Length: 275
Image 1 (cartoon, rainbow, N blue to C red):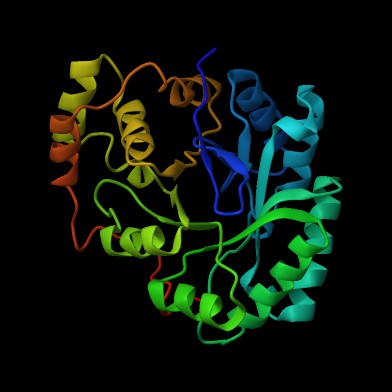
Image 2 (cartoon, rainbow, N blue to C red):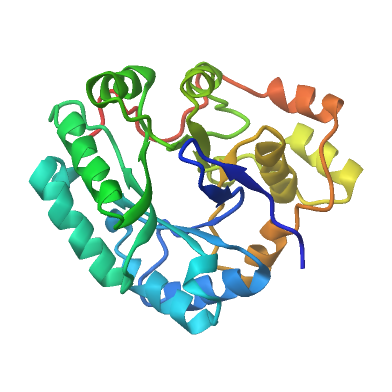
């Protein structure tokens, strides 16, 4: 089995660098998908209340036979549940669906600046961490201004900011802010929702290393010090996506992929006006 790599978050906790994303994985399918991933060596599962599969993820973890303490489980707060009291209630609902006593990481899924409640919501997450119900807290899809505001108003820095990030949308300015604040960057849609798998540059680098384009892109995230959560429901792909710890990209490879970055590369919503 491949040897997983990990990063240490700003609260001292360790997080596996590669995990399984379960966006658009049906709750009924999630148990088998999660069980397969854990058998393949994954030790991080990334869910969200909005994915409506927390119950299935919990079932898959219990069925796997892997001790709960060895698995890093993330979920996220729905946009409709912003606000201090609402966030606390939403966490209760999520942890109940998983069937766990605690979660490893809880994220605000989107800042939803139009509601202007993300600071109060962040204060609720701080309380959950202080109570020991979640080990680490973070955010998702936060721009630099959102990050700086919650840090300035609470003094608590998120451990993670999970954002859209792939070779065509490399988020360099945001990553610079993350480095300044000591926030780990986690990449969603790390393969560009599949659009990068046919890219000629990626294909050439993959051939050079005897790897698939998907493996090459996942390795790019790892070599850049990013956390990465590719999603698949196909057993063969789940296994294949984890087989990335037996090679590294060299400086030439990294330079070639760096050149793929595009100002128009965003695929998902813009956090400045989403929600």
